[in-house]
Length: 117
Length: 111
Image 1 (cartoon, one colour):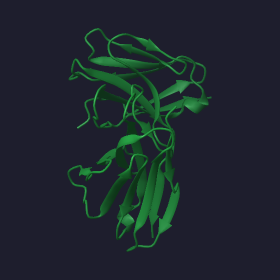
Image 2 (image 1 turned 60 degrees about the vertical axis):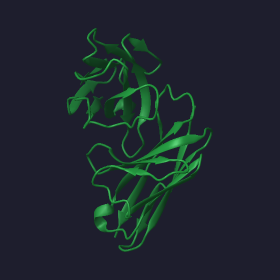
Image 3 (image 1 turned 45 degrees about the horizontal axis):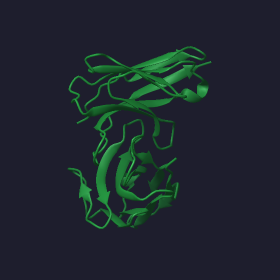
């Protein structure tokens, strides 16, 4: 089945620095990827939709200059949290849609736990 | 906003069937019902989906009411490893439609 790999699984960074999270589709081409954020005990909140070769579409209230998304190839999308602050500490999850046959829904990565200190 | 509502939590005894309800009263004719679950600190995992007929796979069964306004996910013999948050989502099968997650049901399987 379709596999999405997310890296790193955990990252701790200092306040004010930037962190990049990678999301790769391993055995299919992902024309669209989605980025979610999840705070403890809460549901997943969609941040943005990333389309290969074009600019990402951000959900209302999500700062595009703070959460930079690049989807330069059909197998890789990256989320960069710029000038991270403790309130950005969260669980970030990506999901991917293939160009064909997503009958069984979108595939999710295993998530990245970001802690900003 | 999510198009589904689910009870926030449920308990189930190990070995018994877990029945998780979902309300999707505004579902459109071309929208499918998908179920995912999220085990602590992992990404959501696909379980099952359906349009209007009942569905069964190796993980679960899905019962959709005739009017399609609600559905029930059934885990026939719950185990401790089924403890997770279960999400019911509706989406159109074609095209790139984003998933909007509701609050989900936190299922706790008790030994």
